[in-house]
Image (cartoon, rainbow, N blue to C red):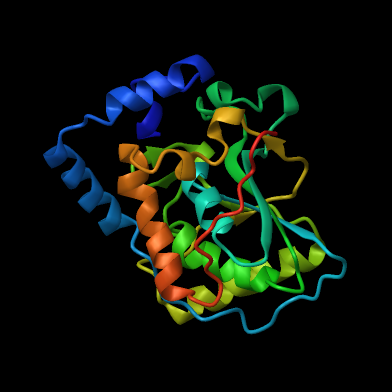
Length: 242
């Protein structure tokens, strides 16, 4: 993604890179932000016509929708979500690193594992937020400035019920014709989730002035608050130290 094309995000370099890039000229940042918002504007969509009932105090949803910084940030602000961890899904354990995933050859997608209380927020509600504000489901193998299969729009269902609801909802949304084109979100078998490196966790909250976050991800938080006021909470639930 653009955030890493010039400066690799390794743990010892991240803070220095952050400090340097915070001095991006204002005009350049403004142009970048305008372009990102034009491509990633939220879409008002109906909820799924049906939902699933999940028992127990917690449930898990696994979503990929471009850079995991923004997707994680969105779900951390959703009422009923108890954790949202950035990581990798779709490939092998030995290639589940930021550097290798960034090559686009591992099968991994930048992914967020969402843990939630199904008595407070349902899988169907999470799907609605995912399609509406967390990413653009019409972009094939990219999101805004980030290109490659590692940024694909993918749902990794952890149950047959989740998979069926996701398929049904995609069909409903395509039929409604509210997006700029057909939905290209894939539904892939869930095999495993591998948490990303510590310096990727809670990145949006810890680095709100990072230019990439300002341009691409803070507008998503604003859209969540505006379009889903009942599901939005000001204080995000953070991962902290893994």
